Length: 293
Length: 293
Image (cartoon, rainbow over all chains, first blue to last red; front, side):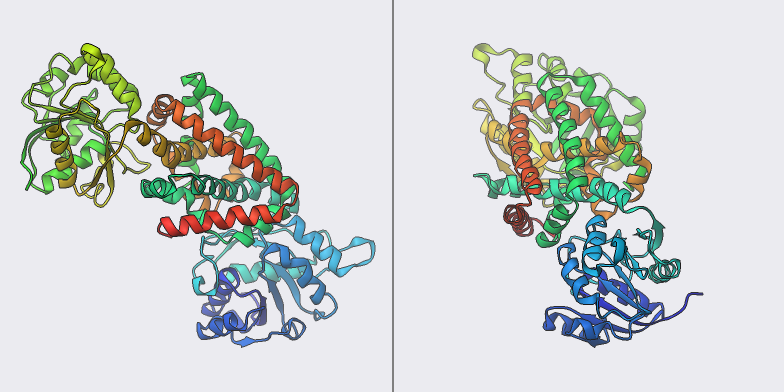
């Protein structure tokens, strides 16, 4: 049985941090949850919803007494937050995050903590829960968000094994299936399965939204279009940050996708039935095999 | 109140034709439903499921006595079917279809019926129900498929107004909201909202399926990916046909999309935050406004 978390401090109490708090509370795995953020009304709502127990607007004060500090803010805000935390983080506290990109978060920590030889803090364990919906904000939080979902931890070569174990235990108590991988591999895989699809969905909806007959176009859209574009209802700032902060891996995947799409375009233009059927059949087989239908 | 359909003949009894039959039966709007197709086992299953009342493997025989003949086959099969029907279609029968492309279906009818001056039959009313799922086949048919969904009719300049009214009444009795538009406009709008999204979903899944670490990639995929790629589980032959048969409109939309995607790629490469935020915000606003969340 894992040790109880006496105090969890969440910096950025939205869907991700809020759902973790609810799950840990339900599991009886956390004592007090302290919430810190920029918007006091938002944090007051989190208290009303039973997501956090105490508001602490001052970030340095919010982490005092914490066993674990979770930074669940857009990845673009990580470095500024880490700079505030670096001089005040209590010695026994584990620092983790829920950012969708890991290379940039690790670099943000390196820049903020300024350790000798570019080392990273031993109590820093980068993480990424592969869960979420197109909704955001603490109102959307629910305790089952992580049930059966993966959480990827990308420990650095400086991460203390005890710190990793504590972060792993926290997510497992929230119902998640925790895996560990390298920072680079995480960023490549997520570019493929999450960042590129979001980019395509945003791009397609925007292409249609800028057409003359957009009213009619959206009215004629069927269920398939609603599903395909659901992720284009995601938070623009969050996805802006992800695109900027996972640039190398995302551009590599995007170029690969554009090349493949170009081949499909040529196949259509050339009535190359064999090629089209081959691609569509391979895609259907892969999706049916790997995803629920 | 609309007149009862004494006999509806469905050529190609799958999700689309089967769901129409179930809806009309539930509404008490049809006497006998005759099913014709290539696969007798499939038609026998349709009888077992109560979707059709009678099997007629011979297409010429299947349309005898029909008030309405619905061709619900992949668009690539339309011309061959129309060639068989042209000499045997009873005078009083209305011919309609459920093809996802309309220009190619109209051209198929023109080639098959070979009327003077390239005219089209007065009893021919092209149609397209904007409904369906990634599933196909009569097993997936259900009577509520068309409830509140749009059916687009694209009457030709030769279509008889009484024939149009009869097809409209049929879909309305199945619960659909019927609209009329031109063939060209239909093909442009559907290229944007349906054909291009399917192409992108197939293309993305295939890109991932051909990567070395595909196993891991699909395992790490979250709910957003499942929704985004659901349409890649659609029938490859059907979508092959649609791509080939709506080539001009689809290529036009695809080129427009590729241009816009290229601009996004450059914006990411140049850290152009303003551009990214502008596109993502416009897309989210459009989707939230037009689609259910």
